[in-house]
Image 1: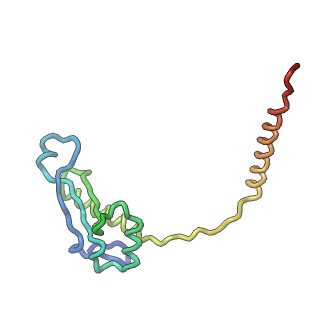
Image 2 (image 1 turned 120 degrees about the horizontal axis):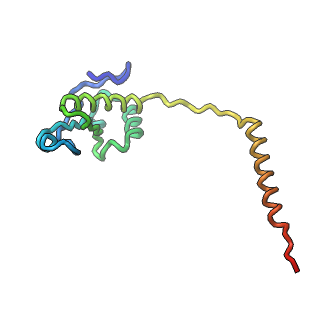
Image 3 (image 1 turned 120 degrees about the vertical axis):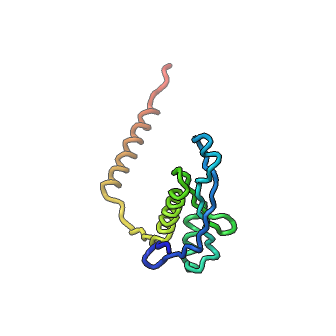
Length: 140
């Protein structure tokens, strides 16, 4: 079980891994060994997540979810497949925690008096500068 929060945990059977070759430098080793790990999670088929949570995840992680509703998280940071699998799993858990974090409401605050005063003073100064520009009379 993957523990996302105290109220949510996902069974490992809902997660699949696909392995492939990593990109970048490394010579022959990179070309012949499948160390890149891609975690696939079918959001729509999951029974562990409520509809509200699915909507939140879909909204927050829209760039990572394809049209079929599959969430992809890849890792090719390490040279071993196991380390990349663990890194992808950790990133997946972190993304879900972030997406399901409660939304904090913004508390309305007033604009401070000093800020208003400073804004008006700046406007007056700018206006005076512009007024002085147009006062030059042409010579005859």
